[in-house]
Length: 478
Ligand SMILES: O=c1ccn([C@@H]2O[C@H](COP(=O)(O)OP(=O)(O)O[C@H]3O[C@H](CO)[C@@H](O)[C@H](O)[C@H]3O)[C@@H](O)[C@H]2O)c(=O)[nH]1
Image 1 (cartoon, protein in one colour):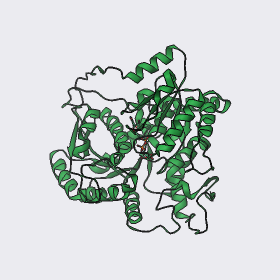
Image 2: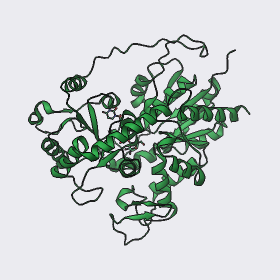
Image 3: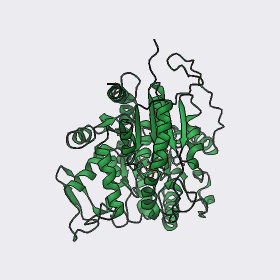
Image 4: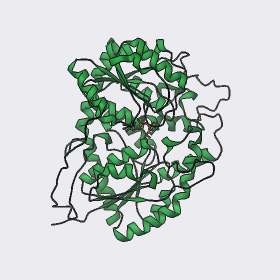
């Protein structure tokens, strides 16, 4: 007997670090035979469509990105902003998409009733849209429960209120006395002694919408942070559902499936020629040379002085490396690395790199996606957080689950400059030292845990997603 195919609408915030995990999540839903409509803007449509690979149970719907005078025309993804100082107006301008989104939802709902909406935490206004149609909303913030619990503890306790608190003074969290944070580790406006202003109000309205949503989906598994998941679910709303790591979602390449229950499944062959850096990694594997992968996500801003110092530090370390940089023009004199290190100035398939057997370490800014991709590949991290909640992810990595080490800054501040000496010392420690060895062992253990969690049928994340779908779709049908 055929069962009704459920329909989910997914609407990420316009940033690669937010779109990518929801694309992976889309594949998790497609594997459950749920029809997915992915909402995005025209400028990111092809990126989204490529990832969904024309899956017949998926659609891509675009709505225009609002054009505000303050933002450069044509920028529809925060990683394309010329400066992250434009992030607040970029994020706030998404509110102007509501009328178009509402119209899109009317059509979608009339054509194929929507069972639930998954939308980004930054798109708080989508709760109101969903409520108009009685559609339950799941929120995705792209944060671990560890980081969410710390942010909540800091906010609820007003812990950074003291005007005389210096930026690097440690503050102990009463709820988690083994954790200390500094003002420099919390993103403005929340690090201000008295947070206020339109961007603060914007976030507060997003938090309120989030708390009033059906649930929070977490890009991680319960076993990675059980204490913090339980803490969140006892003291905060909405309920957190650990259904990841999303990067372990296998694409469901169905070529034909209008009849979703019994449709033939044809796996499309991967005809892509390997990128030159993957061939380089293969060669290094044959030579038995371990590689440090160096990358800082899609939107980190690093000064050219700092980039040049990274080059010197990598050179001094004697370690072999593959370094992806966003700055296409900066002159680094790469020839001096000879065959020991390569610099890639293109978009790479990061997961493909991290799962290559020659990659034995990852110097990372600790965006949550990169963190989860490294852990699930069993690659230990050299944490160098740059912005957003990355300092908290770095704490989780180095102190809580101990799957990595941290770079040393010249003044001990999380925002401090990293010299060639500090960098090469920690690179060597990660790749060759005892602490690196210990972190590698623990990362492999956590990698195994994450893979088990995602196992079809038995894994905790797999089962959680099943329970969530039953609950949310059941509610709709009741
Ligand atoms: O050449 C590249 C560069 C990046 N990526 C991918 O892009 C994503 C980047 O995400 P992430 O590592 O989380 O970094 P950001 O882009 O910086 O992510 C933003 O979004 C994350 C999720 O909310 C937050 O944790 C970060 O702090 C925030 O900066 C990852 O999946 C990478 O694999 C590639 O595949 N190829």
